[in-house]
Picture (cartoon, rainbow, N blue to C red):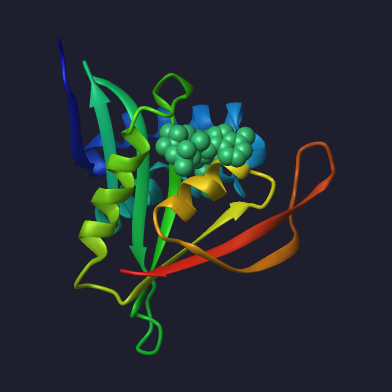
Length: 165
Ligand SMILES: CC(C)(COP(=O)(O)OP(=O)(O)OC[C@H]1O[C@@H](n2cnc3c(N)ncnc32)[C@H](O)[C@@H]1OP(=O)(O)O)[C@@H](O)C(=O)NCCC(=O)NCCS
């Protein structure tokens, strides 16, 4: 039986990374604050740079990426004690299997010793994601009303969450 592989994705993995990310942005569009057009506008060169600058984890099985997630340190002398968890996505077939846990554990392990605290946002109505983050020790500290304008024109609130690492 083949096993799961967890590894850092870098600029060299940009195609595999963006393919999975795009699936998420299309299939779970209401869960994300960015659209596929935003990703296209960002451009391949900027994505390569971001993958090398941030810490992006991918979990694969038989060469197929099942889950991704990223950590970025917030810049600035007064804010560099904070990190951001971004771009969490697990393919539907791998949800509830521990893949998301492995991604989050890897990101938090990496963050330890580099930052004091990490933050993230989730669409407030995305109960599964909010429950997942709470299980990983994130607390709610606010809600941004109408943060995202969804494709149907409705507005979605975002849950602001944080935890010490
Ligand atoms: C968010 C995501 C990464 C979590 O990964 P996952 O494998 O689904 O997470 P898990 O199954 O380990 O945990 C989900 C938790 O929500 C619970 N849950 C499932 N459906 C739920 C629902 N409709 N309402 C509330 N809780 C729910 C599960 O019981 C589980 O909690 P528990 O482990 O304490 O029982 C994944 O669902 C995903 O990629 N979703 C689509 C994209 C997305 O929302 N990304 C996050 C953007 S902020």
